[in-house]
Length: 224
Image (cartoon, rainbow, N blue to C red; front, side, top):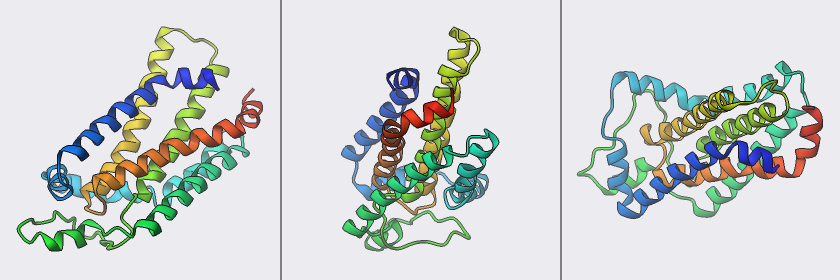
């Protein structure tokens, strides 16, 4: 476990730097103004890209959670993905129904001087904004992949040197960037506020580690 954490230090440090920046922004700006700042620039390409990238968290990532273990011939890893997503999903749903937070489209009705940026063809939701379930799913999937990649690097890589570590670290940063991009897509589409995405990412980042900690012996046996 300690080796995996050490190997994924770049992934973890980068996430906490990103989280720190987000927390500073949340402390500095009111929610409506911050949302408009983060959503100020829309283009046709970005509208299409984020509209469909966000959909990945609705079913394509779940398909990949099945396919990746099958392609690796490690069917038991399906349980790791499933347990991580179920734990994350349960935490998200508990918080959603505890806070019943309004979505941006509802809150901005109180700010008629601010025109909420919307993307054509996106069905807007009105309730249970906090936290973001899509963001949680993005972070669960890509954090699970990063952890499994680290374990593969430690136990299956034939050669480990500075060059392979740099390649591995870049790979883990790409995974983190893809997770963060999924979170931002929810802000871009005005389905969530930054605070919703922030907490969703924390849940999605944390749960795969918790599940890995308690199931690591089984996972390690699978990958020897």
